[in-house]
Image (cartoon, protein in one colour):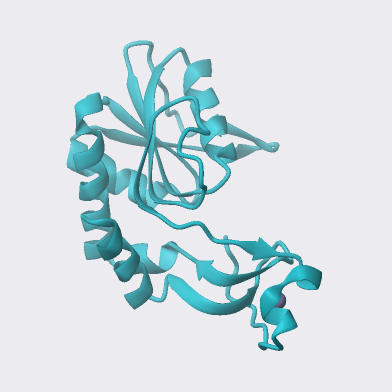
Length: 189
Ligand SMILES: [Zn+2]
């Protein structure tokens, strides 16, 4: 799936809004991204999972590991297309951890899958979960890469589309300066 087709899927699903938004962080932006709105359609989720699998099959992963909640649906779909297990890490006392009896073995070849990667912080945390379990991490994949530096992880990053979304403090927001009314979209989750 081409990058433009991915972004178009987000637009037609209402998962990518363009306007003037107050984000949950308090910052303002001209775009709002909510990948749950595209993933609510199973046929879109399957198509995006398949596209991630096509980009990452050469890594020959044995398991997909995703951070909860945002990465679970796309992780499941990518793993299905790759024919491997899908597990997720979730927060307990603030730290990402494997629960529910999920485990990784030293023989496991792990692919991290997320919906959106921004700073890469949660990706790095998820990588650390796999490394702590002595598994080998081969790379990370996401539907959207919101960052501008694909080399900011210590591993290869495969993203279906790049979308750098600028955000501004209200005082320095050019849309506020132009008097454009600001709206608050649903929770970023
Ligand atoms: Zn503004």
